Length: 228
Image (cartoon, rainbow, N blue to C red; front, side):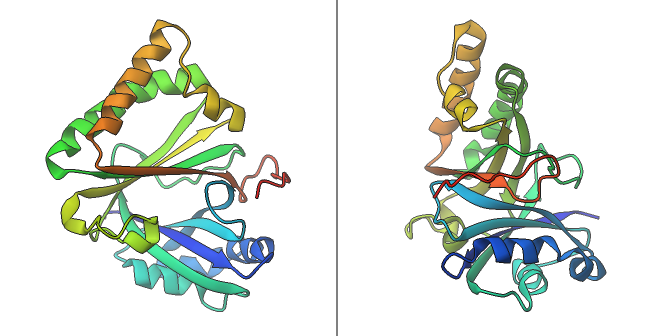
């Protein structure tokens, strides 16, 4: 049976993001009867509002974004708004084990013309091994939206309608924010080749945006920095 992931963009009341995050992290018992599980909860680092959380859930049975959202946030305290996007995994992840290591998590959304999607995947597969080895980093997953493009969920411009291309989400982990910057500035021929491959992938897209986060559900260390 196909596994469905759902990305949730969650806005908390002013200064209440931590309490809401703790509440979301305790939702496993409510998700499990519906064949769901919490994949992770992230806080904003750079590029999104202070009181916004990113959550992902994973479901072993058929589910819509609205259904997943309803189970996840039922009774949530200090919740202002939420939008959700259902997705299917592509090249990664190979299984539904959640990320557990703290770090700098980049969420990058793409809109890619459908005719360029196979090449987009090929370029990802080509670049990822070199990227991971050069920067002590991991590609957590690349997901494709399953129900067209929800511009509100991904903060895309209004003119990027579902007919304009394939919506996908790439999540990568780096040890820290410094390595995120470092990965953009190649040193040596091998790193330059990786960057060239990734640049070709970017050039296929009609639109892309990235923001960075840290993992609130990490098991190794807590992020206590004041980012926003």
